[in-house]
Length: 379
Image 1: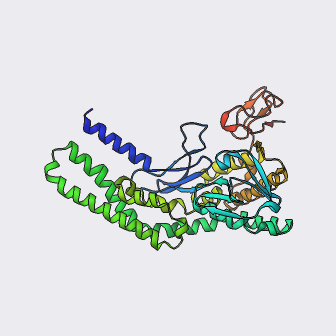
Image 2: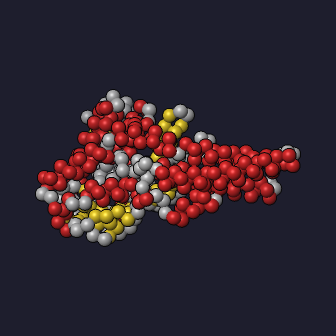
Image 3: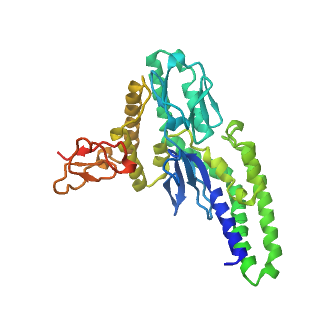
């Protein structure tokens, strides 16, 4: 392998990294695939990492990933419960509503009483939580519960998810066309110049088209940010990211990702999936959510938040089941028991592994992805 080939491989690897969005591991990406959509989990080389990458398609039409995530907090009529997985570190703790003085969004972080309690995947998600929780401390408990229920209804608004995508596609159409021309110049034209005998004939038109596409895409990216009907100044990416998006051709190819990332950040993953995924993909995601809500141990929850944990799980489960039924999917059928093997007494509802006993020390599934999932008895 020559030096040019090695250099080009490094060039391509840098571009692949540009295709990824750094998000919390709980986040979910939805990307177009063969005329439809599919869900894409975060990629993390180490299971202990709290953040990972959600990748958009690296080839034309350069479809970006829509990013969404579940609520990273324990919230209910009594207060806000936080834990290490939500904040990125620290101890689990509970703040009663009577002790909450202010809730604000700082970029993609949610601050309660000036302290970060959650790091979200999107600025839109953090803002939505701040708007939903602001003023709850002054309300009676019954009114808090009603307002939180309305907030959950908004998170599961499938119609909103379905209506936003055409707006994004319309407002970024010119940017995406220029980005595809730039991609062709970098990953079709450049190899042609390096490894064919046409370099002397083609280098000038290929270089001119590539540079022009780079300049046009950069201008259209700035224009899309300023003229977006929904991406206001508070939701725009940091200045450093905006500069990088126009200063590097590899980053300019993925400039539309900065807009798509914020599109559905305030919606529940199932709501976005119900608007975009085919029935097979929706059934797979719905089954995973049902298993978490019905069978997974919530883990180390802060003291005093037990009632809120039960409230949030029950309210979320009701909306998950309602969303699935609206797409003609029976939640009970997703959790049907597998065919029973001989001498087996229990099974895992998540991975369908079977066990000969369902008592301690085998009350939960032994598989790592199913940690905390309670086993179900066949009887």
